[in-house]
Length: 235
Image 1 (tube, rainbow, N blue to C red):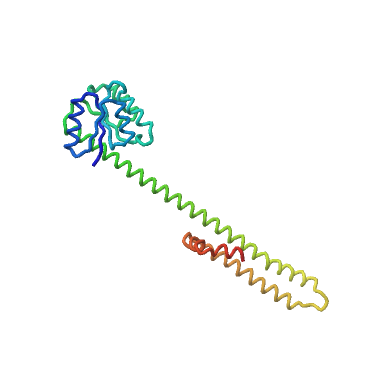
Image 2: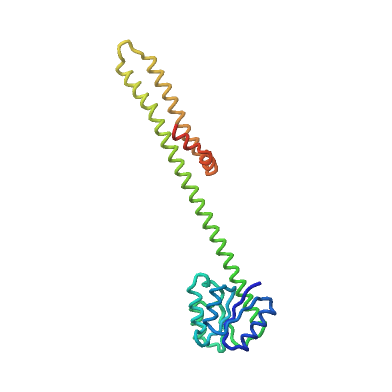
């Protein structure tokens, strides 16, 4: 059951509105001045506020300004009640953040339709906000996964570069020995070393190519879960 806060300084009008709301299936709460209305709204935020404009102590503009300045009440739908449809007055209310207005006297149907319409619009906005927030959270999670993937690829690349350096050093050494063989010569052995290290180098390069297709977000998540990456790095 939606809770409606009615702020109206004229007691007969306040009582009449509360009765209409109760018969219309709403939980209605009344305040006969602006200060009390603000207090009630802060203590237990309603789903919608109906507020008269011309009131002593704190008028409707002051009520709206205070509610819009508090995070807990800033988004509550707010409908002004006014005895005169003055354009300047109405524009001032809208500029302060009012959602709608009703000109007194109004019929029961007008009141209930205005409230239902505003509550429906607010629900749609909140649904859209929730969807956008979930989309933003999903995007943020995806960005984090991509960052983890990038970090993992960098770790493996460093490891592969380190492993690639070893056969290159051996190949370089074998080439020098072939150019300046020591006494007794071992030319066939040096050629064998070159062949072995060349094959090892090709195998490592193939691993780099295969990793591009293997390092999907799901695979990286599994590797991190079982701590396999850290073990490989230590080895």
